[in-house]
Image (tube, rainbow, N blue to C red; front, top):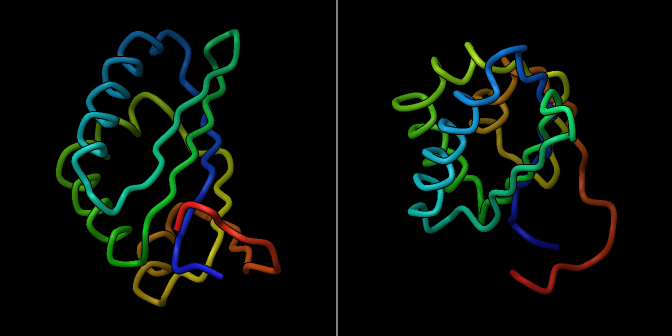
Length: 120
């Protein structure tokens, strides 16, 4: 098992906002790439530009909290004007502090049940 925390967000990109959403995504990816505890940060969008999935994997709970501090200070306001979270699935074993931070987004938590991780 691993200390990694990861999630998949499903977003509804609001009509007419795709260009602005793309600019914001570029900024967010650049910021996350500077976070040593963010191991994956992958954005995928549907052909019509209306549904976006974001896969994020963190080394541990501390890395999640570091990322969330950046989110609050730099991106949350613009993000919520451009897209809404329709689903959030969280995997791993987030601690109480991480859960308290994520709970406002309405996640479903999944505990590790088996398997392995070759990347740490």
